[in-house]
Image 1 (cartoon, rainbow, N blue to C red):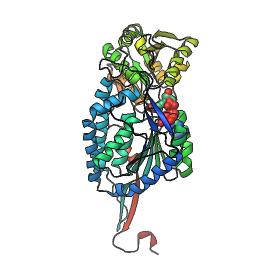
Image 2: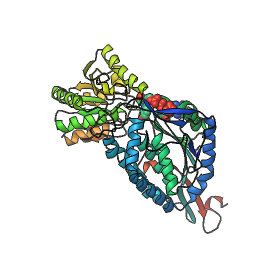
Image 3: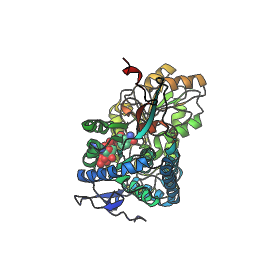
Image 4: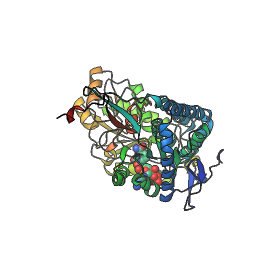
Length: 492
Ligand code: NDP
């Protein structure tokens, strides 16, 4: 049983309302596939209602004193911290995140993100370019109005904050569609927003299926911007759907992150960091370091120790504080990830460890996959496609040129990492790797102050940092002829 009962309703215009179709979606606990609760299924008409509510609220919120807006967002950050225990449990049950991760990462990072952007609300400055004598030009950044946000199932709580916090700070009203697999924390955040005084209609949550509710949100003519996190294939559909009103689009898509371990790496650090890079959150992360590239001199030593580390990871009930790895988020996804081990073997790859569901009876009902390490060749499907599971593909290289060629041998370009004590080499790779993020002697470090996003088929636009404030605002250039004389170009 969940501590908090969800009301089988949508959150629109500051109220819990029924879905127009009266349809529901069961929400399952991936630990044992038992039903946690049912939620209302939002359809296209519900998205339309939510956009109407957001449209009415947008001018009020957008014109509010920016520091008052910021203060409400800061209050929300405090409220999230007060609700830490409840949110940890919610995320663990709904998504399978182990409570130790939710406590260390998901909940504090969510609060930190709202706090950072709460502080940003009154710091979005315009500028005054020097123009012609007698004329003043000022450029101000205005909110877009109504923004649509589509959040996936891998980090529902944290990604809700990454999407909502900057959009709110910039003065936009939001319609957000969480994944129907993991909607609970987003619904709860909306309720907390209401509690702290964020006005009705500023945030509207419509859980539902992507091809129905998500599609409508992406094509809605009154939505000025759509921010999407998910697969590259769906990202393309979002772009097509957005064409009707030429809305702004921000895409945070897949990845096949190269994680390079050079011969001079500090091996214990590289092992711990690489394990975090691919096994944290069961590998369900767009920035996962899923291609581990090893210098041939240290490959055997690294692999032996890395496999030992993988085998020692404790799989179990996400609610157990000792659990280090929980289940994947859905049965369908578990099957998809397991299929990749068969694909690897069919293409001549070698499964070093894992590649199957755990045998323990206690875990048999859940969506578990053992931490998996597979040796493969460049060009194999497991070296190219995003598995999105606890699945490391390992390849070797003999020199820096080969390492760089392997690292960049992907259509994606999101996260990347390298482990070396050679400073010039580290900076050269940071320059040459085709990726939006490079971690040197660390992996998957994020902060609300640093932009997050990718190159190539990993999408465009950035979450977080000041960059994201540009995504959620639009510049307006205002010209003033301040001495009321005839402007220069009009003189005859
Ligand atoms: P999707 O890209 O299909 O789903 C992501 C989100 O988009 C969900 O909320 C989904 O809703 C919604 N969506 C689906 N279709 C549409 C549409 N036509 N218009 C608007 N929104 C839509 O990913 P999957 O859940 O199917 O996962 C498949 C693969 O995608 C994963 O294995 C992984 O490789 C990648 N992925 C990457 C993520 C990332 O963080 N970059 C996150 C999630 C997945 P619904 O759940 O109802 O389909």
